[in-house]
Length: 319
Image (cartoon, rainbow, N blue to C red):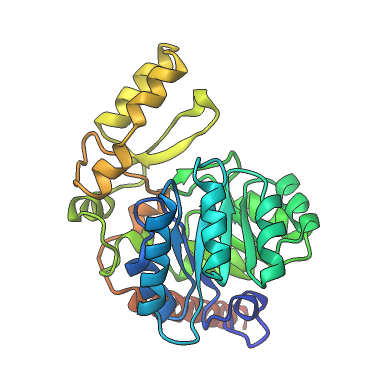
């Protein structure tokens, strides 16, 4: 019932399932993106602060791994110092879909829309959603604060229906979605698709360190913390010695430079080196519901099969 032929997200993306893989820095590479795209979703490479030549190589690699006719995307973090170069790489390589975050996507829309690129900004408020719709966005990702990494102030539960009512373009729900229950909830709130991040960290094709995956599997309901609020850039991660030190510095009103220095290189330390004590283990609250490592294809198929079973059950209860 959710996989209708007229689903606007599937039509816009050219995918079998209305699901996007989150553009997670240091995590979302060609291997992960190609696995999700080949499984019928939209795999996304994270540009993050990657030098343009390396980013272009990653995109070319993804193209070689993805089955013909299946799309993929690139996430551009607009506050990144390499955002401009990432935009030009996207234009040169004719990336089919670009998602954006942390800033106004005006330049991205102006540069890529004439090339036929689908542009989907990630937003955290109704005001942002309305603004990017006027600028020409094809859809929006409404991301609640349950998500991992950089977050806004509103929860998925209240953000998604408000944005769904405020714009005419398709809304893709993100934040706290890990299984069929989350998919059904997202559609009930007015979304036409979902974006999933944390669950895909624990897929077989994801190349993050095994320690990172295990930390997510071991997570419980209160295992995440929000750091960086004093800087105006809150980030959700799994609790460890690093988040405790962030909390200590922020509680003592440490200079912004000292707080920012603490985070330098910590995401790489977690993803590449498997440092679960002093690495930045970015993950959403949905980590508490991840208990295994599966192929991306199985994750997606299970998610939508479960959603259909839930809807059938709801229909039977109504009778």
